[in-house]
Length: 279
Image (cartoon, rainbow, N blue to C red):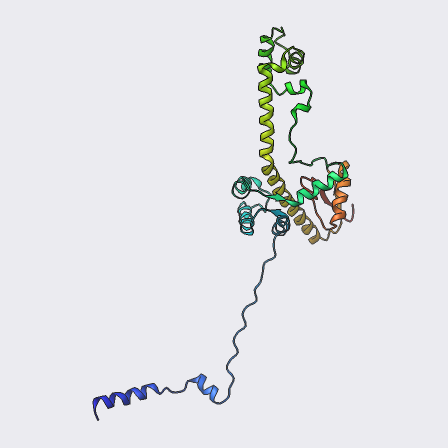
């Protein structure tokens, strides 16, 4: 037998494998062991802050889903479930809201509702308010000027005054001088008032952002407090108003959404006090 024939014969024998246990079982019809089912996916319950954040952010336009998710992570890094605003406030605004065209529809809806009522809650913050200095009395406008400037002005126009006079008295004297509104003092006042108007407009987005994040944080706190109370068997709560005059606004909010919790609208200071059975 040649070496080549011997090699082919050995190679053929090497390819013939003996049946293993699994093959034997299959041959006699024994079922193979069933595969283990995949372990169930257990999702942890969302925190109160997560739930409120998700709900409120659906009313924010101009922020992408990715941005909203990153902002939530930033809040969580503060380790306070939203209440430590100092831990994320500035970074959140600078990164996601500054110089961006965005709006909070819930705020706009409440503003419209209160306008229809012809009244606003005690602590309502109107981000659209712009100072109108020209509508104020001259004396009131002069109070925005430093007392030293008023003294210099009175000295320039030759009006004597006592050094012990308060700013209000100096403003009254300046108000009745001739040529006040053509003076350099008045020009400086107008520039100061215009700057105040521009600053108020520039602050709008940051003020709205502040209202947004505080609303989320304190609504989440209200839910946590309610859940803790329910765990203790407490089922009833009393609405505690910061101002009794605001009751009609709170009633409106609760009628609109019976499941709502404070703050019922932006910058609402209402709280829920648990009622114990022996109260």
